[in-house]
Structure formats: structure tokens, C-alpha cells
Amino acid sequence: MTDKRNRVAVDAADIRAELLRASRRGFLRRTLSLGGLALLSGCDLSTHSGVDAALETALRFDDGIQAALFDRRRLAQTYPASAITRPFRFNAFYPDWQVRAVPDGWVLNVAGRVADKRAWTLAALTALPQESQITRHICIEGWSQIGQWRGVALHVFLRRVGADLSARYVAFTCFDGYSTSIDMASALHPQTLLALDFDSQPLEPQWGAPLRLRIPTKLGFKSAKNIEAIEVTNVFPGGYWEKQGYDWFAGV
Ligand SMILES: Nc1nc2c(c(=O)[nH]1)N[C@H]1C(S)=C(S)[C@@H](COP(=O)(O)O)O[C@H]1N2
Ligand SMILES: [Mo]
Image (cartoon, rainbow, N blue to C red; front, side, top):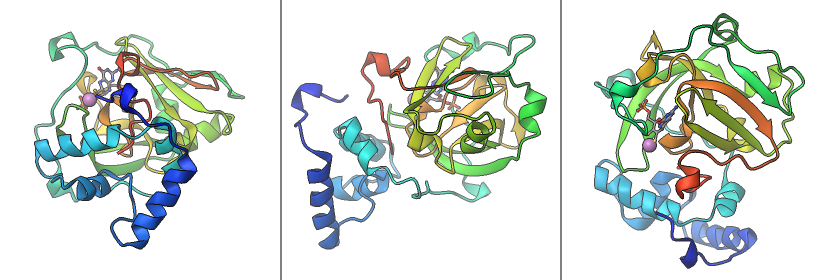
């Protein structure tokens, strides 16, 4: 989607200055929110083609610029329970009949720049403080849906294992062969959850059992399902779709 050849090499500071000027003119305040981009590009987020057009605009921004503009305090919009999409659409790089059951003896492995590398059982994760959110999941393919997830805030988990919070990346490995990674600022965002529940029930395999990432400030492909390992690292980890050219930062 992003045509790297057409990217203009711009300094993040220049862009920030330009955006400040723009916001002073009153056109926009939260530029890299999908809503802001939708306004800018005249896209209507309530339709699939509108989301698609806004995504096109979002993906034209360079990863580094997106990271520089990311505001850890800006919260993704939340919705009432009445807005939840049912049935919720399944998506993976394979059809739903190939969904994997949770392996026997599943534990969450922790690797890389963390003080405590002990693996976590589901019971231990459930014993950590839980938070719930109703947010919109936006897929890069141009569809979106609202769901409810509950689980442990990733920043709580990272602090609990003594992660190096100055490291650059948090990477996720999944037992279905998927992988993805996010920047540390996004990992520490208050709405970034390690979700155990979906729609008030423990996650089913289709929706990422027993543990998935839920990160409403990024496109859907960052919300890793069926997680088996988390690594904190300074070495760029990439990911399944990222290796195939999807924009790495993928903020919404
Ligand atoms: N393990 C795993 N996680 C994954 C994927 C996948 O194929 N495998 N697909 C991603 C993509 S592209 C999307 S849109 C969402 C879909 O989540 P859902 O099935 O809950 O709608 O999961 C993301 N996480
Ligand atoms: Mo997706």
C-alpha cells in the first residue's frame, strides 16, 4: 500500500512545525488520528470505502514521522455496549477451519530485555489487575468493527517482569505462525491490553485464545492473537505482514 519510492525524505521536526501551523489555522488538532485524517482527506469513517481512503492517507506517512507524532496520552475512542458488532468478523492469514486449538500446557514465554524471564500460566495472568475496553478494530483491508476485550494492561505486565522500558520494541510470537511487533511508546499506552476475554467470555481459539494483544491505537494486524511469547528488544523484529510490506508503525 505504501509506495516507498514516492516517500519524500522529510525531517520529523519540519512536519511537526507544518502541523502546528495547520492546527493554528484550526483545521486539525490530532493529526494522525484516523478521524483527523478522515477530515483532512474528506473521508467518511462510517463507511468501508471511507475507512479505506483514510487508511490510504495514514499509510503515506513515514514510520518515523508517525512515531514522532504519537501521543501516548491520546486515547482511542471508546463505545457503549450497544455498539458492539455481532457477529464479530474473524480474520487471519488462513481460513477459520485452520484455527489452532491452544496447545496443551500453554504458557506465555518472556524473553529479551526483562529481569524476570519466568513463563506465565493463564492463572497467573488472570490474577493480575484486569481492565476492559470497547473499541474499534480497524483492519488494513478497509473494514472495521467494535468489540469488547478485557485483560492485563501491557504496561502493567512489562513493569511486573522488569522490562527495560527504554528498549525500542516489544515483539509477539504466536503459535499459529504469526508474529508482529510494536514500538515501546505504543506498548506503554494505557489502552494496550494483553486480552484474556472477548465479549465477556474467555477468548476462544478463533479470537486469539488464550491470550491476544488488543491495541486500539494501531491497525488490526498489530493485535496479535494466540500469543506464545513476548520479547523486549532493541533489534527490529518486523512481523508476518510487515515483512510483506505493510507499514510497520501502523498507527490509526
Ligand atoms: N496470531 C494471529 N494474530 C493475528 C492475525 C493472524 O493471522 N494470526 N491476523 C491479524 C489481523 S490482519 C487482524 S485484522 C486481526 C483479526 O482479529 P479478529 O479475528 O479478532 O477479527 O488479527 C490480527 N492478529
Ligand atoms: Mo487485518
